[in-house]
Every structure is written in C-alpha cells, then in structure tokens.
Image 1 (cartoon, each protein chain N blue to C red):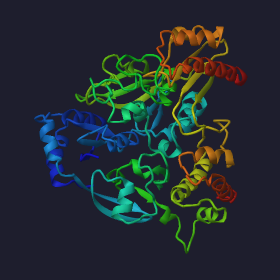
Image 2: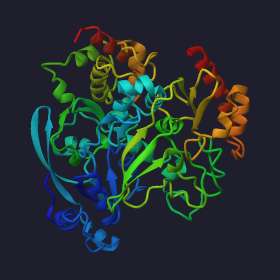
Image 3: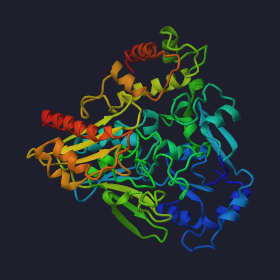
Image 4: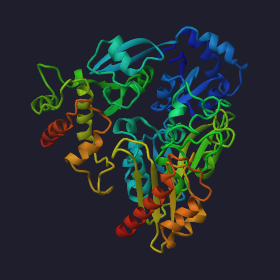
Length: 207
Length: 318
C-alpha cells in the first residue's frame, strides 16, 4: 500500500519516530489537513485477478467492488452489518463487506458471487438456489449464496455453532445448523425454507 | 463518514506510540463496530491505525497452564480452538451466542471487549447522551428502556455493555495485557477493566490514552460444568435481554456472571457463596441495589429464572 502525499507528510512524522516524540500535532491542524478526503492505493485480488485501486480511505470493500470495479453482484442492503446482503468470501472466510475498508485488504483474496459462478457456469449452490426457488426478488441472494458456500465449509472444518449440542464432537451438516449459521442473512421475501432446502442438497454431495 | 488518514503499525509498541502522538487516532482491527459508528458520525477519528498485521492472532499455552489469546484472534477462531472448547467451554458458548457468522469472522478478542453499547439513544445523534456527548443528558432515562441496564447504572447513563464474550472472560477471571505509548506493559484484571458510568459514562475502560491491548490471558482451567444461556427476542443474532454464564463445581460451589443488565459484566463474588441455596438467594444478592425502570423491571425476575434454568442444566450435565 502507498499513501498519498498529504497523508505521507503527516504519517512520515509519526511512524519514523515511534519513540522520539515529535512536536504534538494539534487537532485543529490535523483536521485542516483532512478538509479533502485522504486517498490511498491498494491492490486486492478479486476473483483471482489483482485489481489496483486508488481510493478515498473511507471506501468500504463493498463500495470499492460496486462503484470502482463495477462488480455489482455484491449488494448493499443496510450498510451496517445487519442484513448480510454484502456477504462475500475474504481469504476463505465469509464477511460483511460493508463493515471493512478496502485499504485494509492489501493482498487479500476476495471471492464475490461473480467469482463463484456465472450464468454459463453456475456454482452448485447457485444451481440449487434456482432449483429450489431460494429467492423471490433476488436482492439478498448473492449474500445468501456466498454465506451458504462458506457455512458448509465451516461445518466441514469443525467450527461449532450456537446450536451444536457438543463442543467436542464434529458439527453436523443438518438443517438446524444451517438455520443458525445463516441468521446473519436476512430475506425480506421470506424464502428461508427453500434456501435451507438448497443448502441441504449441496451439503449432501461429498466435498 | 468524515475523512481520515490511514496507516499500518509495525509493532504493538509503535501502534501505542502513534496513537498517543496523533490526536484523534483510533486503532482499527475487525472494524465491525467502529466503522458502523463512523458511518453514523458517533465515532469521528481523524486517523485510523490498522493493527491487523502485528502477529497477534495466535493462541498459546502459558507456563501457568492457561492460555494467552492474541488481541487479534477472531471470535470464530477463539470459539473453535480445541483447547478453549475442552477447558473453557463457557467462553466458546458465549462467543457462539453473539453476533452472526460473518461478524464473528471479523471481530477480534480485544475489539469485542472494547465494543460500545447498543443503547438506542447512544446511536441516535439527535438525542441527548452523556456517553456520546458528555453533559448533554440521558434521553434513555424516561425513554424506551426495555433493553437497558438495571444495576451499576447512574443518573447519567443506564446503558449496558453488549458483549457475550466479556461475560465468560469475567467468570474466568481473564487478564488483559497491554502496552503503553512509553513502551511499558501491564496486566489489568477483567474485574477492573470496564468502568461503571458514574458521572463520566464516556469513560468506559481503565485504558489510558494510546494504551493498546496485546492479549487476553486465561488462568489454568477451572474444571466444573460450564453453561451459558442467553435470553433474547430472537433465537439467533440478537443482543441479550439477560444472559447468564455459570461454572459449577461438583461440591456445589461456582461462579456466575450476568450480561444484559449492567454497564459491565456483572459478577458479585459474595452472591456466588450462596449457590448451594439456589437461584433465588444468589439472584437477590447479585441484584442488591438494582434500580430498574418501569420498562425493564422484568429483568429482575428474568435473571433469577435464567439462573435457575442454568443451574438445573449444569446439574443435568455434571
């Protein structure tokens, strides 16, 4: 990651002299430096391709995908980590892309719904959602599918959940586990029962 | 969101030094709470120090037989660690009762302890809130307070601490290890970490400016039966109305910490001495001095009944 000139002027003063205290930077002077947005460069591997970006530091990973890279499969719902529409897979883990900054993801491996599969080559979870009518309006669907793919992996990796009866036995690929683990993905259309059927079908195929 | 500069720290000590030198600087780890609050103009840092690459993501055995949990260990990884599942089941259960799978993948051990209240008046910048804007008053007192605190609260603030993990950490008597801007380190007991609001609800922990959490240490395993029970409005992905963490030993002694009712994990050692007498006695001592509102007085009964249920569950499991 590289830093804009303005940012560098300030950071250079503090990072180079971690223990020799430089003159104190007043809040007023610092705020004046921030009248314009701070820009920062970052390179993120998205669906297997490195993508170099120069972004306002405030840009979330979600906005970087949608507004800068025009990968609009990842959806913005609540923008506060409550609905799960923005779920994607970062370095093998599902996360809410609205609650993380693009600049925090230098070198990260990001998989979005476009990376899982496209209409000519669907991921098995995408195909199962179509088969089982796991959506109506479709807005939450990319987040549901990214989450569901990660949920199956989490169970196979032995990560327990709130409804796992034993903490020491391997968790099971069962509906009760899927329901609990999918609670961070809200569906206003109420397609939940069909979503669970889709996940169950995919989970029945051995990895 | 207001503009801010962004940098990465090279070491925990450098992070602490930077935070002390740059006014308006904040650490960012998982970011799940901080970024949410920045979008709402409740947190307004001028500079974010990214602490995600400091190598603090390991869980190691201590010479005393306990575990040292790096500050950046994600909630998912802590809950799933084989040693935690076997010897500190209360901690795994508390973590798994909190947030969503996505959030647990991002949220960190130190960040979980430092998360802010979910009091609706703290979140609404149009309302008076002594925590967000000291001296402005408390709109929660006399407002809608069903979710809010019943004990340890003050005339200035009735917010609760929202963490499930912290309830287990308090019951387990965890220690919080820190480094300060001058490079010195110290250890803070969980009991002393979160502060009661008094007249300064904006001061939530005993951390000093720039002080950086490096790890949280668990003492050697306590044994016993561990139960965490969270009562909430939905069966998943909701904050606690009341939660009870219990470690019960074969001789009937034990530890109890309660969430959802106070500005910090609520544990009263004198109440634990009454465990052989049952939930009613323990609950009465634990909640001695409570000042519930009309909306949340049900929590007095709910604590007693949840503790009763948890005690029965622990005896079944033992």
